[in-house]
Image (cartoon, one colour):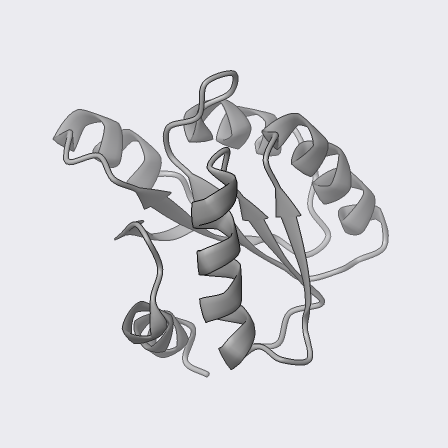
Length: 129
């Protein structure tokens, strides 16, 4: 399952940079896009959908302006040509929060932050790559 683009959406710039580096190691030929603000990411998701691009999205659960749940609500409004594969990233152990995000049809799994090499290997197994 190849991807045209990988989107990292996390308001914590430092964490986003670390996670991007870990993911990039296993997807060296895939363009990575980092977003500190989910509003810009949503615009890009819509644009990439119009181009029929397959997206892998890593989405922070708790962000100050728009949470992952808000982003997922916006994603639900898009009529996808190629549905994205989404992994929710979190430090939260709140079962209510985690359950709400995990039930979304595009969400493959919830992962504790930060993503490291071992977690990326687990992601590859989930994606059967």
